[in-house]
Length: 145
Image (cartoon, rainbow, N blue to C red; front, top):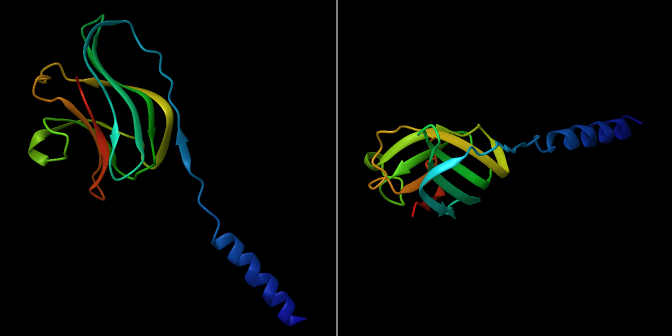
C-alpha cells in the first residue's frame, strides 16, 4: 500500500513539475492615425528567433514621427528592444534605442505605434532592429525604404 501511495505521489509531483509555464501573448491593435507623410516602409527579416511583420515610419498630421510595427509577430524575450540603426546589424555605436517591448510577451499580429524623436537623421538611420540585450540575441531587422 505504501508503494502505491508513493507511486501516486511521485507521478503527481512529476506532472506538476513538468507543467509548462503560462506564456503571455501580446496583441495590440491600436488605431493608426491619419498619415500625412510616409518616411519609409519595410518588412522584417528574422534572424536568430521568430520575427515577422512590417514597419511604417511616418509623420502624422501633428508632425509627430511615428514608427508603426504592423502585423508584428515575435516570440517572447526577457529584454527585447526596438532600435533605429545605420546598418542591418546590431553595432553599439550605430544604434538609437526607441522602445522597450513587453518582457516575455509573444506578439501575434500586433499593431504597435512608437513615438520617435524628431531630431533623428532618417537618411542615416535606415534600419529597424529588434534585439534582446540580456542574451545578446538578434531577432532581426527591417530596412526602411
